[in-house]
Length: 433
Image (cartoon, rainbow, N blue to C red; front, side, top):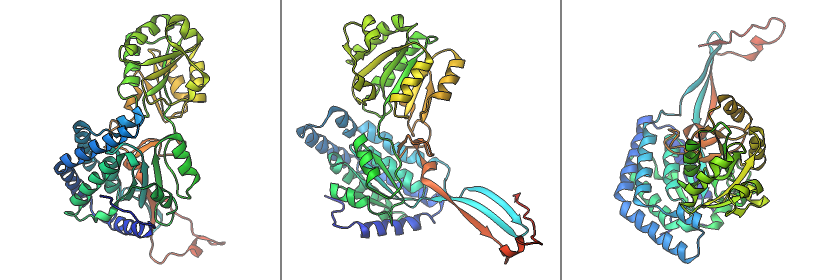
């Protein structure tokens, strides 16, 4: 079953915008009830969703899907359970809509407020991860936004089953099911990018080339990240045992994730002690190591690194290693080759930590912990719609706060600007209330 196959997306986009405008007016309680209904509907449809995912995985295997993409595509019972729990967690979060950010008297009886409000309609284009659809839908509804999802061809069956369950759940609530739409064809991607009249933000989740394609082919604002080239730097003042543990987790726990490390930087003072230990731990779980010349002197059995390795997101059990002379050299390497996603330092020297935190230009800078913590769910956002590596906010994992904007509301009593201009201009009070 395909949810939508049409030549023009204008009618769908209009429906979504209309449903979203009504969603924004609903109470916090009504939106939270909708999230609870979605979670229950997903639980009821668990067998159908998992069966659809098995069919997707079987078809993808036959088509020769890459190993990292296959891991993202797989939706087992545990992933689905966690995603459903995430829907309920989002319901427990504070309502991001209607928050008063500014309340100011400009003059007696003339009052200004700045109030948070939804963006409107989100266009989310993602590749293989079907559970991402669940996370995105829950955040969109909580923040009062409509959402048009475009899934990758690998995950069509899974996403259709998820979308059907979501719409079934919403049909029992005050939320119009039209706030959630699913697109499934490549042609619809191109059409979606043209909907600047109806769609307020595009969030692409995919390869570097795909994100750049989206950025270059739409007038709609785009939020996202192209690469996930993350680093761990092992400083000369590192606790070696701690460094091994953090490195292994950051590479191995889920190597296909964008917050898994691709490069390991090691201070020359600890390299002779640290590298054999970390190599043994990584090779025990089948990680392929590639090293620079100095690393090969300590680990002669591993493959030599190439210049291309420093700028490659493997999303697999492959790790490039470089020995550096100082924290400054490590920072220079990260800022040259990194993707401004997440980078970590392992050290017991707090002054070095401050230097690293201050000079590494990434959305996430971590000390003595795995880069895999860079995740909206782990940050307590309930879930995330994506990761942003841009300089302007929102930055890093984007949860509810990245899906709202604000408007200025002013109330007067017949006030006019002429009163406050000219030779006898009345002064403003500008008093915060």
